[in-house]
Length: 272
Image: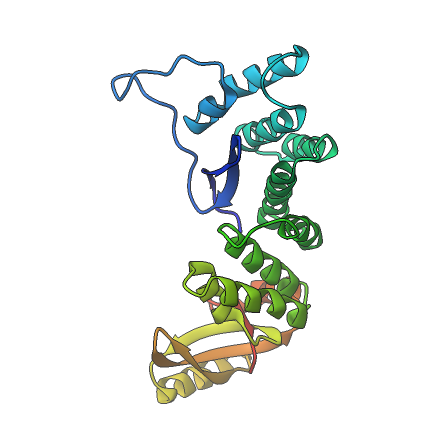
């Protein structure tokens, strides 16, 4: 997933931490005329208001000057958040989050640093799903039954599924659905549950007749496809799909060729 990121905060005892979650943009810094700029050197407040450069300077100063209120693991974690938003390359953020883990015996910092690392690996342009899975699993060991655990369960299942480990991924989908039945991520798990392979979806139609007509049309271009009945938002639809692939990478490679004939084709998990 390559969406831009925004910062969502959640409170743990004694300190406010920030979690990177895909799906939006970071909050912009205050503009003159909108509100009075907050004068502060507290990196948490600076990050919350989108002033990442100032926050990074404050953190670097604290790292050089002992005696401040923040533990070392927290400073490295906050530094990682700054670098994640300031740099297109995630190398420095990864280094900071790993330093936070190395210096921490605090459960909350360990959880959040692992989540942040997992997001980086999962959302990379060339995702590192194995590393994402390891980080998410480390975080899940100490997470309570509150969000963003639903997100982490979904992404762990999705990463395993993308690597072709469908049965193992299903376990995390099932846990997400059980613990967070009304969550958006639980619904995403339901959409993927039962998958056994990846297919390339060429189109979705309201009737079997239209789907079969499309199958005949694409067969004239050399593509072999079948129709699969699916239920979406309570409606019965007919998806036209082609191919059977064990991993998402293999399906994505084939998709490049298929899109020359069907530009709107996508990769989708499938059980039929």
